[in-house]
Amino acid sequence: MRDFIVPSEAKLNVKSLCSNPKAIHWLDKKWSTIQNKIIWVDLCSNPNAIPLLEKYWPTIQNKIIWGGLCSNPNAIPLLEKYWPDIQDKIIWDCLCKNPNAIPLLESHWTDIQDNIIWFGLCCNPNVIPLLEQKHWSSIKDKIKWGGLCWNPNAIPLLESHWPTIQKKIGWFELSRNPNIFIDEWEIQARSHFRKNVAEELVRVVCHPRNIDKFAGWGYD
Image (cartoon, rainbow, N blue to C red):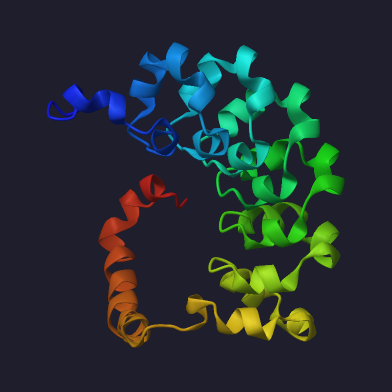
């Protein structure tokens, strides 16, 4: 805490500090005297509060606001640690939207499929590999197309399946997706690379003088 604040420390608003990412050390130091002032939804949502919550976990479980915790991008290791005991408390919509929750969801996929909130999952910017590489064939009928069309990272997935999904597209959501457009500079850069760089790169790399290096480059 800055020196000029210290004399007036007692005037600090504990409720507001619960959402302050840099206040965790102060809250921990004062924990015994401020517990009854904690705003639990703010503390559970605070990305830096996870060590504090874990430290006092045995005595505060009944105070946890699970929506805030499940939305917290840094809470996944804590949720994983206590997973067997807290599954019935999970707020699935919040967890499915959490960008850091994909490994947790994937590791328990077999057991939790019935709990998945598909719109939230489809909106998750980090879900695309899970949908495409792992489960597309088995879950494509569960996709919430509005959520997926809104997802800025979903464009390659939509493009790869375009012939079979056009009738399912949420055009309102897709129209709001910034990645349906390619910058003019990107178009020109790709064209320049194909015309001027790629051919020259192949010519230089594949020159006979480099034959003895092919093995090191992954070629037999």
